[in-house]
Length: 218
Ligand code: G3P
Image (cartoon, rainbow, N blue to C red; front, side):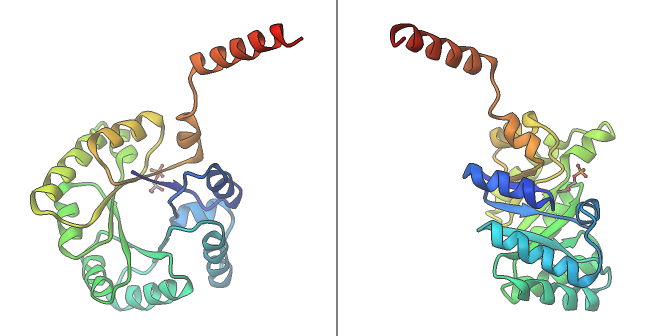
């Protein structure tokens, strides 16, 4: 299972990278705005800075919504660095754009996916990754993990090569349950990644080991 971090915050990306478990980064326009990144040049420089930190796929989202503009924008993003994955929304022109990028060997991440039908279309168009937003489904009382299960079944039925990138992951149980289901990738906040470390028996066990060692080595 690949671990991506879902942020545009360079310190958090560095922290996850330093842990030695990071396989990539996902961003979106809201995450870029949260870091105060605006203007074409700053956005481009920020993507380059992320690519300098992480040796793995970095999703950069187009903000155009018509086919021609998405192609132009996506090609410019892909030219920035070999690890850039063009993130394209699940809309009609987006599906066409994914097919275009796929035929040209440009990696894509189909984003804002909320149904199995949308995931099927993304795979048919040749998306590298499909991003079902599980947290946002949970937010409206719909089981996000069931969608991951559905997509896993469909993709396995036909050996689709599109990787399931569980997105809008909010906490550790999302990560663990996605791993049980067999999502290829999860992208989540640093807190969900670091949360996996925690167990009170690890802390108390270590405390006892160190105390016992100290007793006989005083
Ligand atoms: O990867 C998609 C993600 O950024 C959305 O997460 O928490 O805003 O639903 P969230």
